[in-house]
Amino acid sequence: MTHRLAFLVLPASLLLAACGQSSDSTRGPGGGDGGISTEGAATGDGAGSGGDADVSGSDGGDAGATSGDGGSGADATGGGDGGALPPMSHQTFLIGYNEAWFGSSFATDYAADWDLTYVLHVLDGIAAGGGHLVRLWLWEAPQGFSLAASPPYTQTVSQAFLANVDTVLTEARKRALWVYLTLLDANTIQKITGTTHTWGVNLLTNQGGELDAFNTNALTPLLGVLNQHQDVMWGVDIVNEIQACSQNGVFADPTAGPRAFLQAEATFIHSASPWLKVTSSAGWPSSILQKGAQYDIASGLYSGLGLDFYDVHAYDDSGQFSGATAMCNRAATDGVPVYLGEFGQSSQTTSDTTQSSATGSFLDWASGLCMKGAFGWRFDPQESYLAYTEANGTWPPPNGIFTARPAVQIMQVFGAKP
Image (cartoon, rainbow, N blue to C red; front, side):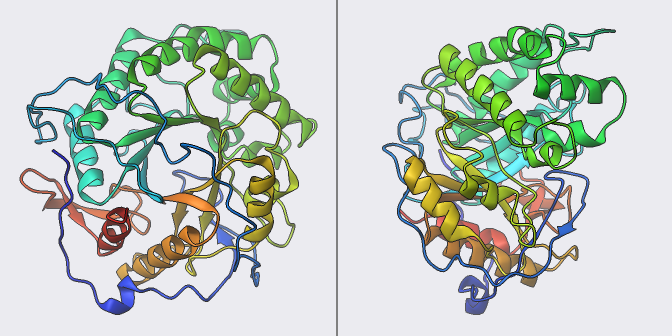
């Protein structure tokens, strides 16, 4: 059974958050170091879309057959109902939550710190919170495989890691949640030191046979698992926010380098799993410099690479960002849909009012433009001012461990729309 629970009573002013402001202040490292990159004010040109960039089935409707691979039966937190699997959502505008890594287990959640009980609580909460989709990261840093002493570094991925991924997909399917997997994180590659940094740079720049080793030893076994879950897999993000590397000197050519890597990986994934939708998410926008995120999409950085959709990330208290019209125009020309793959407030202060206002504005604004869905960052309480929940609660019943913040009700309202 699906969880679609009504709870919390919000003032109408929060549920109908205004979206008239427009400044551009975006969290730089997308996912976990808490850093904010404030790029300056912008008046914004996103009041109108440049055309509807929809393609057939882009809202998840053609993500695979409807036969369930996850089985049935009750689980530890009541996600399974012991009967037929629930139907997947096919809403016009998809609502999702980023979980990235589960809890505080950055780059260890599918390996050394695997915690099925916590995973189930998160999936139950996302379904109860109006989510149609959960975005999860796998290799923000290597986990499930070790690094060799010299290039190529990528060793064979462990069966335990693959089994845990399989379990997450199975449990998500029981709850009718699409799964959107991110493979790599450019922020980590750019910031981390030592062998892991060299591994990531070699992978992105195809040095020392690293790309081939990664595709053979890690990605191919993973795709073997995903191929068994076509009815729940919504898409794959090759690398989160490649701008962290392209704007920081990792590529000798900040345009040709990323394009070569992304095209190679999109081609590889489509060859191995033709059914699977592929993208690479965009972050680090700068309105002053007119680059990153929506500007990279608009300028064609992602065009002609074989990507099936675009994913833009934005953080701003106003719930809007500049450059949207140009981005929508490019997406329409390219014939691919755009999703707001991460969004949230920019202020680093925990405030229910700020979060609710930003959430309502982003959802109202994005759904009126070319964007086909929006996925809030993030569900669980690990980043307090961005989190949609607090710890030590009893939600969702009967066995929940979270307390839902008021913005969750706004997500529920949008999630209930057809």
